[in-house]
Length: 66
Image 1: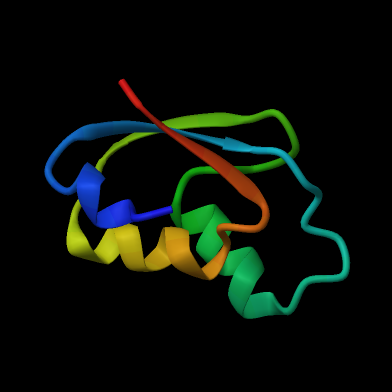
Image 2: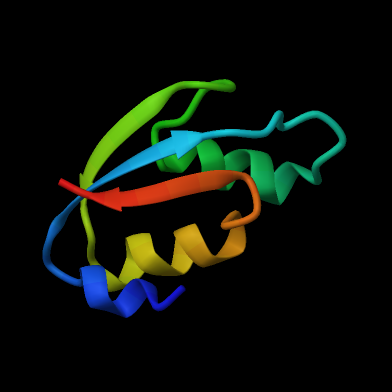
């Protein structure tokens, strides 16, 4: 998925997989995105920094435009 298409738009992130057995760096990235557990949702403005974080944990979350 090309996350650059979401640049400067409001997006919704939903965590779909658990953070168990992840390295601390990925756990910190999820926390930075405002996700605290499975089925939690966060609404953010997609900047370059946020898109970079999404790419690191894309296997754990769903991304949709609002």
